[in-house]
Amino acid sequence: MAVVRPFRGLRPKKDIAEKVASLPYDVMNRQEAKQMAEGNELSFLHVVRSEIDLDDTVDIHDKIVYEKARQNLIKFQNDKVLNQEEKPVYYIYRQLMYGRVQTGLVASTSIDDYADNIIKKHEFTRHEKEQDRINNFDYCDANTAPIFLTYRKDDTINKLVNDWIKFNKPVYNFVSEDDITHIVWVIDNDDIVNQISNLFDKIDYLYIADGHHRTASSYKVGLKRREENPSYTGEEEFNYFMSVIFPDEDLFIMDYNRVVKDLHGNTSEEFITKVKEKFEIEEYNDEGQYRPMQKHTFAMYLDDKWYKLEAKEGTFDIDDPVNSLDAAILQNNLLAPILGIDDPRTNDRIDFIGGIRGLAELEKRVNQGMKVAFALYPVTIEDLMNVADAGTVMPPKSTWFEPKLRSGLFVHKLS
Image (tube, rainbow, N blue to C red):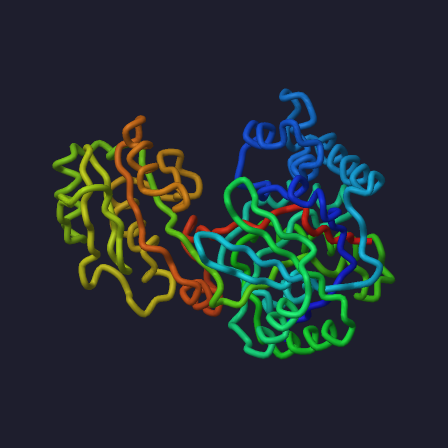
């Protein structure tokens, strides 16, 4: 059963929360982060992307980057930009985007649950990305960014959360520069806190929706602290990491699309002939771009034209939770055998475009030098859970969650 606990969060003063809150560290590069934080000394990017405060010649993985993150976090505390709760609490974090609402519980979750697969995974991680956040968390002595978790909804938990929202005022309510509304409540009633903890004790599994590298890093920092403190009891904060836990019904997964640099030696005519072996293909003649409207259909942009592709029967195993995913169907039947994209994680001829950028971005990338683009129908949260339950992993770049969780609204101290 899932261990979920309140914690004494560090959080910004109400009147500056909007200035402190930043996009996640991993959705921008160094220069973009620097531009986003320009003129805003309170931006939490000074902690999660602290290289922006150093010369551009400094390697982003140099230890002085992580030392700068530590110094900046300490300064935020000393200057009362961030203040710690007097006692452990839960937070409710609600986001509104395009008229949709998702409401999660901010809590600390167990590194042992991660090890025991009670917190389930659906992606591989890369060592260098893990090490980056290991260093950030370890130097800062804090989880500086939350993990995005989900679970199969529980009506009793939903009622407790909604009742608190109904009868209590939020501590934050602001609209960020990307037009996302962020609202936060603090649950500081001991009885309600205990009820929530007990209810999650009846939840069988939590699932990582987004943030596999942050989760793995948090786990490894916890293990490191255990080695440094051999008499640990298990109650220390380093045994837990900060998460925002959403019921599955609230989450919105967007398409995650692909662009490829060339046709792997094929002419356009040869390429289309090969595609027809595994896909029904039809030229799209209506206005605008073609968007896939159901599973196992794809959009393709090639030579200034949009095409509708539909996987032929028998080209995939419909009962396989991984190989029946559209990302796997496209990879196994087109990207690998026709375009030579053997490993999409490492092949530099392919790039990935989050659905938030729209299909026009695919046209733009092809018109700027790429050769062909593919748009996919989004996976569902049930697809994700089925893969995790089967103990397997999804194809790379299968899910794009929106809205993104802001960093800096909550920090979890490890000691």
